[in-house]
Image (cartoon, rainbow, N blue to C red; front, side, top):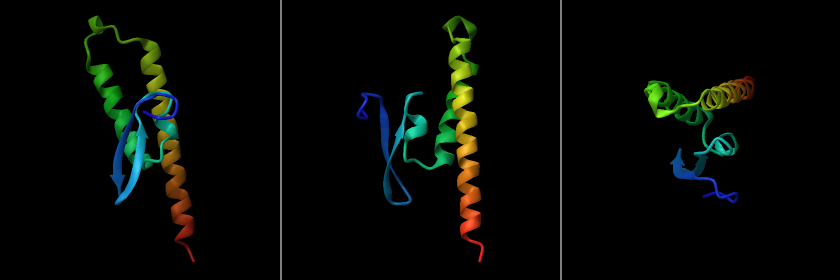
Length: 89
C-alpha cells in the first residue's frame, strides 16, 4: 500500500526497485516504466470490456480507465522524445 492506502505492486525494472500503482488514483504517479503502465491499463480495459454486461461494468469505469490509458501513452511518447533528444550529438 502507498502512503494514501492505495494498492501498489513492488517489482524490479532493469534491476532497480520500482512501485506501480494498481488503483486509478495512483497508477500514473508510480515510478514504473511508462510502457508497463500502458500494458497494465490496456489489460484492465480488455478485461472490463470482455465481461458480460450483467457483471455491472459501468461506463464511468471504462471512461476513467480509457483516460488513464491515453495519459500513459502521452507520457510514454514524452519519455521516448526526451530519450531521442538526449542521444543526439
